[in-house]
Length: 66
Image (cartoon, rainbow, N blue to C red; front, side, top):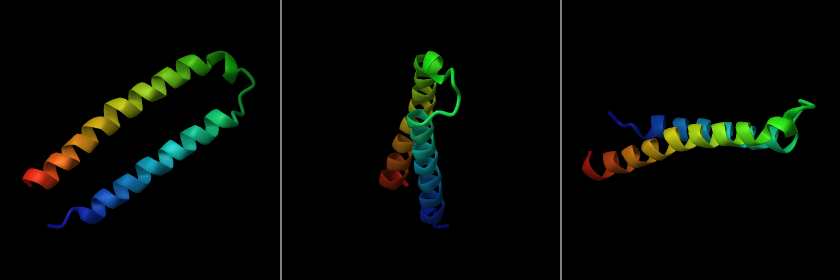
């Protein structure tokens, strides 16, 4: 079974989510967003790091050894 279409779709979703997150960070609608920015940025960075890095490593391992 060819996994390439699924990987492409997953990559597009991840990139769209990243762009959406950055756009919200640039133009927040919440008036108190600036007060909470550091905590939000830290949380989002951890979430992206914990999900994206292993996904990237596993994708590379899949294509090398799979």
